[in-house]
Length: 385
Image (cartoon, rainbow, N blue to C red; front, side):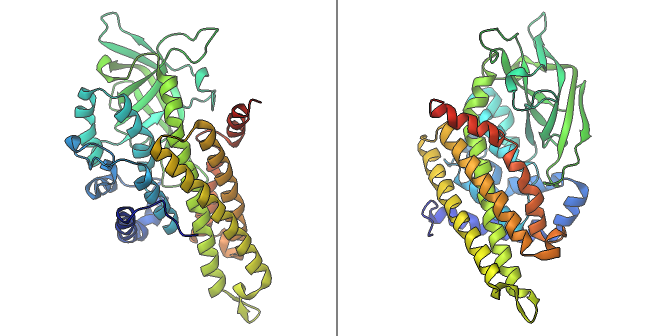
C-alpha cells in the first residue's frame, strides 16, 4: 500500500541515508562484524551528517526538528541494506529523550553539543544480572556523600548496548530503599563519566546476532558521581523509564517491520535469480504462495507501524497501544524472516547473505524493550484483566 506517513522532506532524508550507507557502511561492514563493533570514528561521520542532532535544538548544535520519523527512516534503510549503525540507535533512540526531557539547562549545554557531533557517545544501563525485566528489583545503589557533593555508586549491570564504547553512561541506581507499598520508589538516573575511577567495562558479550552492536557487562566500585550529574529529580527514575518506554518500544516495532520488509525483498530477488530444475525458484507455485503470504503480513505490519508513528507524533500513543504494535510486528518479523530464509535454501544459512543476518538479528526483538510476555501483560491490563 502507498505510504502517507512520510513527507517530501522525510524522503529526501531517506535518499541521503541510503547513499551514505552504500558508500560508508556496506563496503566495510564485514570488518565491523569481525571486530564486534562499529569504529568510533564512524560516529563522528554520523554526527557530521546530522543524524544525531535532528531533534536537538539549534542552540546546542542540532537541527531543532520535531518527530521520531527521521529515526524510523534510519532504521528502515539500515534493514534494507542488511547493516547496523552499531550502538548509535541507543545513543539517539534511548538516551536523547532522557537528556532532552529531564536534563537541566546546564547539563544540556555541557553534553548536547558533543552528543550531536558524535564526540561523546552515550548508553543507558538498566538491566542487572538478576533482574531482567524487573527494573524495580535492581540492587545497584548510589549513596550521597556526607558533604553532599557526590554520589558513591556500587553495583553491576549487564546486556548494556553500546557499553564498550560509551563516554557517558546513564546508570539507573537505587538512591533510597524501596517501600513495601511501592517497590518502584527510590530509583534515580545518574550520568556517569566512563573514565571515572572504579567504573569497569567487563566482558563484551558475544551475541548470536546484532554483531556490530557492542554489548557489555559493567561494574561500579565506589564510583564518585558529582551531584550535578543527577538527571532530573532524585527518586523519580522509574517514572522516567516508564515514560520513555513508549518510544523505545516503538523503535523496536519499526525495526521489526523494516526487517520483515527487507526479508521479503531479498526473497523476491533471490528466487528470481536462483535456478533449479531448469527454472527460477520464483516460478514454483509454492514460492509464489509463500512470498505472497509474507507480503500480506508485512503490509499489515506496515499499517500498524505507520499508525503508531502518527499517534506518537501527536502524543496519543499509549503504553498499551505500543505494546500491541511491538508484540504484533515482532511476531510477524519472526515468521516472515524464517520463511524467507527457507526460500534461500542452504545459502540462507550462510552469514554472507543478508537474510542470515536478519534471521539472527531479529530474534532479540521479542526479548529486549520488554519481552513478548510482558507486552501481553500490558495489553491484558489495559483490558481490565
